[in-house]
Length: 350
Ligand SMILES: [Zn+2]
Image (cartoon, rainbow, N blue to C red; front, top):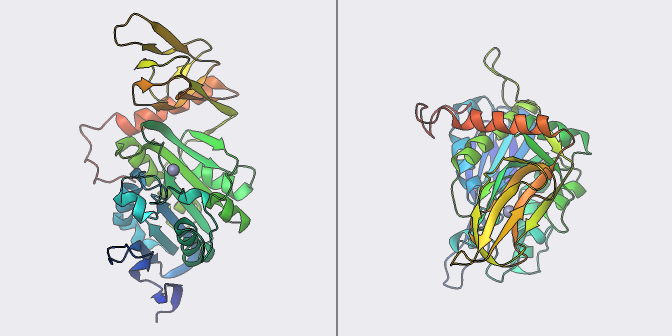
């Protein structure tokens, strides 16, 4: 016999069902309705309720693809608890290839929102009441901002024991114990006492295969840690333990110029290591960009045109740099080495 699991937008999802719900999210002025698409997968057995959301910043599309692949995994047939996938939270932003809403507000600075506030506040309120408040755990998927790429990393409140356990289970080499931003989804979830992870990888408006694969794998790892998915005995290797960044800083352009970058994401740098060179179009005036301290490059600009003061490289510092560097190298090898021979993006990931 089936029993009701969760109700979203008035639609009752029974245990064992997979249901797509269109959450009405403000009509366009053309008269066309806009809906936030939600897919609910209810396991036969009760368990945690996990939401996985993407494109709260409408131009951050790696997470949309991560969710598409996640929803195809055959292992979900054995789900315990409920998975709620929201591949496009900021529908207006995605349509316009924009981080923001049409009024230039940032949805991730508009939580928990309100019924009668700005469009952003209303969408935040809808997302909170229909999704977040009904869940026990959350994973929100992000990328770097436009023209900036991030090494896969998890940001979370690592001072909370359960959040830290799940962040470690995700399986990326770098964790950042990040302060919550005012009015972010993470702050709103923290106020509910809900463990929530933020996965940041790749850049806006681009697909990054490594970031996507690591994201799908990471969500599955977290679901296993929550006992929502079975751990296959023998075949499953526990994800390597990550390292926690002590701090991180952006290196800014000392002068305006055209940038030649010499270090990739994940590179280990020492104090004064050359990161890139800025020059004018004649190559007559050059200024070097160097690392202010030893660390690992966890983010960088991919647009080679820089004005003085613009952020170029994001460097994370670690207590034990050798250990951190070895983990980043192993992670990159694991996800990249066998690309030509492996079954391709749709192949078995986990
Ligand atoms: Zn974002």
